[in-house]
Image 1 (cartoon, rainbow, N blue to C red):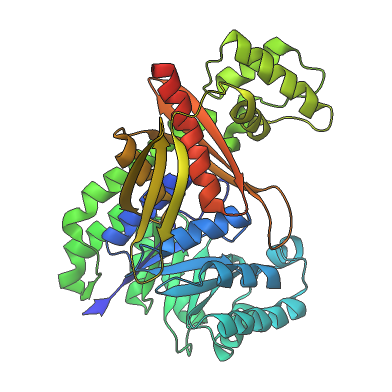
Image 2 (image 1 turned 45 degrees about the vertical axis):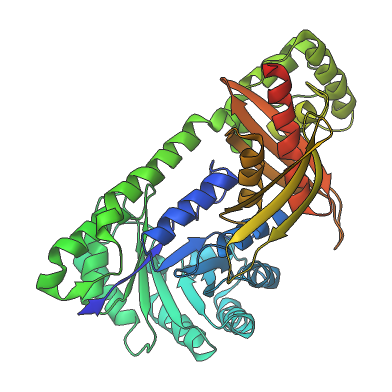
Length: 458
């Protein structure tokens, strides 16, 4: 019986509307489904992306956690750093090998690209025992050059090679023959990723499996092999054709439904996400009047009092003198100056325990009217554990609408700024926290938003 590995790419699209917590939930669902590999995009957002990978590493113990890199040496270093605590880490060197891709994406000629393939894979292999080389536009690449690149990658340490049909133009039998031809003599596992724009991705993948491929890249709601369709086909046809996967088929439909629910929820809340700023038209400058600024705040979900409207506009004018203001900046302005209330709950101290061999836990002490309140809780990573513990102490659940992290200074001791947006009674409340300790900043931001909710409800 041939085992087919499933590498899920649902979390790979950069700039997706998923919040930090939604990404954690999707990763947790994929781990519970027994997906073999969970793929993540390159580390492009600095500390926020690194924190995401490290938090996912805290609860993904069975699946391989794979982070993309390869365009630069820095991207490889960033991936290795983020994966430092993962139980099963993989660096995925993704590079274009077609003439157009090399010229316009990597800005390299064929000889230089071939040299870089060897260097990049070797560099990754020094930092991580499991390295995958992925030709992101394999079906648009000269077959001889592609085979040369694959051979070079394997020679310097690639443990897996992947071929991607990014055009979706090949018929299934042609694609399977193409994969078999270019990987002949390659003595490591081969994976494929197929574009589903013509509805042929599942057929392409399974015919490739029958020609020697051992891993298929899927996703839940994107443009590649649909996870549910492919898993169902493996379940129904596996005994006849001699292949299987380690997926939990009894959990398949429920898990896919849950991830789709998260995806739909993310789309519905896109009006309050930074990635939707262009669609919302939030591009403000010093010439905009108060009515325009308050209308933009309403688009973000805020219902401001007259007093807070004045505070927000005054702060906006100060910021707009130096730079244009988008959704991200307006969020920060509102979190900093609007609905500033007495601190019903104050942070006294906290202890966070996390690692790659234990579940994240938090012990938090709050002050409420000079009364000491303590709680202990666990979660999917240190920040989730902290938020859950605060809810346990207060005795109330809060819906996290958005969670953002950004660096406000440079260097090893950089200050991190966090923005937490909670939704209660149909309204959005935001809190802001700044610290060199990003977990501490996140706890303070969360409490800031909670205090606003408690104050208004009282």
